[in-house]
Length: 440
Image (cartoon, rainbow, N blue to C red; front, top):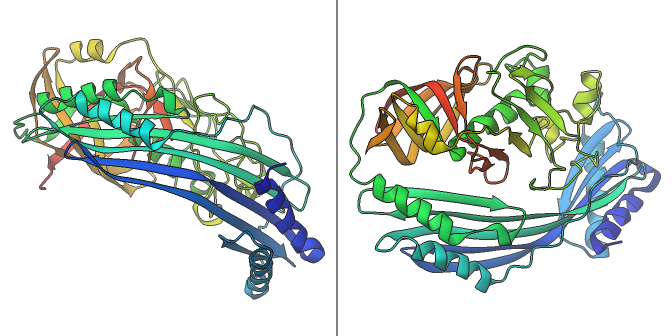
């Protein structure tokens, strides 16, 4: 048993017969190397540690947290959380703590990359963009997560993540590249740097383009933003329960080319095989051949919807709901280059930025393109265009008949909510509504 799991069990033991309890302990290193103007300017590391506690006492529920691991700190956490519960109104929807349930899968080895290892990745990224200015970061994280509750659930696992995100810049443009994996050795600074440099050079001296509806080829970063929003605001069981979601289970809401599922057990997934309530995460098919098949649930939502938890509870889930964070979008068989060759007139979009949802029910979102937007004519990229603002329903964008091709280049994209949440390919879509330039 690890120190973290021992602490989680100890906290639950301190509650004893005074109520139900869930305790989570998170511990491990996070290290970051930042670079700008093609030089490393910051190298930091942090050994994170936190204990989270949720208690239910006489039908009243409260939560607390501490960064102290000594006996006094844990005792203080327990007593203050119990006192807070006494002051709370009765929670009639409290589902109780989850039963003891085993989890499958093997535990990952902790990430052990050194500052020198990260610096080497950065050096390769910078060297790939000769005569350009590079900026970005390389980050590693290795967190042991231990969970225990008063029903006897006692589980732990390790989450590892390595990320390289950077740009190369000319005097008038920038091109980006992003890599995320559960393993540091998967990062390739040379390949990422070459991709960013090529895009920056191609994007130089961009000119404006009239707003309008254009066919688009969206690269994986942009696609990640689409499916992040669909997952958080649509396939979240709380949004469905409250009538804020577009989801209609059993209906063909999307193009038949679209498959999307959530699978924390996939070897590529970033995370652990259980959720914030200690429930094992299940593989959930959300979209199968364009048909909506399911939603993400935690224990509270499962009771309210007469169902079972899918293992998608997150900290603070009573207010935000159940979130899918290991999303996969099925790839196709066509390369991005071949996809571009099939476009008569349209746009190639690297990624979106500053996206904000205007209407969760229809998934109308506004945002900007950045780090490389290009006009395609007769199957060829003819010129770079300035950043554009869009206002577009993400549901309509991939509705039946709207997906013209699905790429073979599936990878983790840098979506609006951070790295490692969506693994998906490029998409060629029939229409995207661009409403103006970056200035309005």
